[in-house]
Image (cartoon, rainbow, N blue to C red; front, side, top):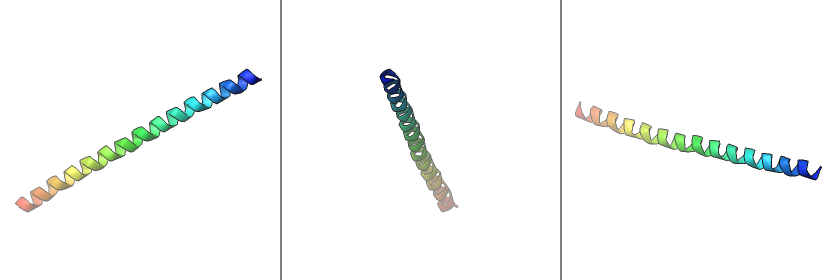
Length: 51
């Protein structure tokens, strides 16, 4: 039984690591998307100013 519980702990730690990695990746993606949206807004403002 002791070996089984150790394996469970290892599996849960690995699962938590994968979860944190996926959350971090999605968060960094949203940050990049925000930057791109900001750039698009600035370009649209420049076009409005030219017109």
